[in-house]
Amino acid sequence: MAALSISSAATGLSTITIFRTKLAPRRLRTKISCIGWDPEGLFKSPPGTGYIARQEFKRRLEKDAEAREAYQRHALEEKERRQALRQSRIPPDTPEEMIEYLLDTEAQDIEFEIARMRQRLDKDFFSHLQFELGQLRFSVSKTEDMEDRLIELEALQKALLEGTEAYDKMQSDLITAKESLTKILTSKDVKATLLEMVEKNELNRSLLTLLDENIASAQRSEQALSPIGEPNPKDLPNSKQAIAFMEKLRAAVLKYITV
Image (cartoon, rainbow, N blue to C red; front, side):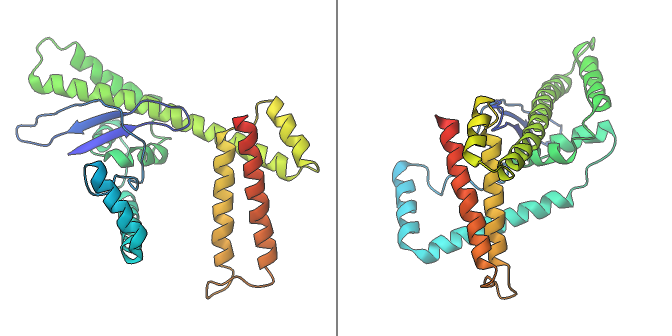
């Protein structure tokens, strides 16, 4: 079974899920629902279905450091496994093959595939998808399989249209965020610059995300400054100052966004 899921934190789009069941004879089951966005598959609920089970799992993690480390290690291994599986799949070139490829993509990987295949999800692809939909809609005699295929492709079309729109907006927001961050970092008066950007509505969540990424990158670099993983004492003040500055800047941006 494969599923498709599309949503965007930036745009608040609803989620579309397409389920394909591979049986002989081929029968397709389509379901549309709203779910959370979790492309990495790392935020699933812990084992257990009820409140008591969740609390017991939480207490175990808090009391048992070994279990907590094992859980975190398992999450990291699962993430690496999923990444390797993603990279092992080779996107096809023709619209016909791309449609089947996307229908066979797991729900948590669809955002990744849209980003990777964005240039191929062009006017020609959507024209081919629309053509196949038209043939199914206006067919004189429809079989049950054709009806299922129609529902499947309609859901796929909606998912891809919303997904590509969300991806394009995200890329546009990222470019704007980079420009805003450069403007702040090169400013002689950061506070005045922030106030000016507030008036122009130039501070947003994309800027916060970019700051988070820079802070995380600086923290990783701090641990990789020497072969044994310990920071070089000569570089330590600069790296810590950079991290502290970006964290302070992030707090200020968050304050102005939430005012």
